[in-house]
Length: 415
Ligand SMILES: *Cc1c(COP(=O)(O)O)cnc(C)c1O
Image (tube, rainbow, N blue to C red):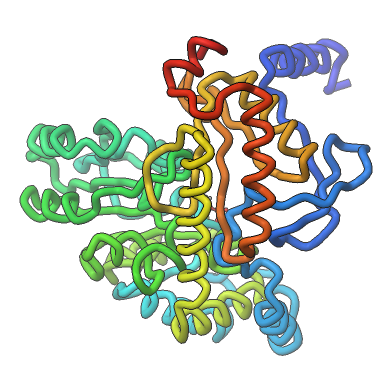
């Protein structure tokens, strides 16, 4: 018997350790479409409860938008359910090529290649374009999928302190002898909601002859005046060598990702990126959905404008209520609680009040930096946000943290 009693018990022991450390991830089930209000079964087995959703990446509120659903139906009818092949064997459909062109146009890049997910784009790109003579210099807070992708590449890896341009410059000097240098960052950082200083990074990359890689998963569709992303926001459209992004967040919320940028780099991915070569590409129904999303966003900034107004309303309301927030102006708004147990209790109390927002604590964020991460959507209307503010005030009052400084909260609860 291969799965012996000993092996089973070893795994049971490991799982018990995870539980004892309070790190066990409880499944939650949504019994509705993704939207501003959803029906959540939590904990598993409980009756589904209708709550205001403040923890989805549904920034533009398109996950269940009628136009996107209609476009997806049309894609299903005209191009079928799937391709039953990877792309380099059977080829891909015309709509996949059309989506690649539309993405390049939207992001202001030379060319684009689709991947099954942004995780796959990040897993494939570095290995495809770098050799052992090259160096990757990444911000210390980049997304886990970038870290995994860098591990697969033969190049040397170094880091710079989060958004610290002096430190980045030192590292660029240190590695000036390398063949190719790539500076690697997220556009908007998902845990803090802060924005990379892409204008300064572009200048440094020009000075030291380095390429710039930006993961725009939490930016594409809504950051910048017309929602192109952090490069638009920072005034460096057309100057980013490699962009990766996801279609699983603002751009419809289903799945899929891409590498977009200099045409030779994209071609290298077509030749060599393993998730592109060995995994099925995005399903036709999703391609049709994303095409319609890009069409809508190119015609009007209405949804990103509403998201911006909602975000300003939410940040102002929480600040006036006396919460400690992380600075920033993106729709990722972390409410700082510092203590892990307080973050868990706070999240549960909010749920009782009909508000769905998740507590984050170590190891997802640094020790002593526990928080409730709220995420605003264009699907929210002001009445949703008003109700959420009332709940936050009530729960904040209960835990005695309104108007308290960081030091006072830490004194009371520990970090
Ligand atoms: C969500 C996310 C990804 C992964 O996107 P998928 O398409 O779901 O694989 C990659 N990078 C960043 C920065 C993300 O936030």
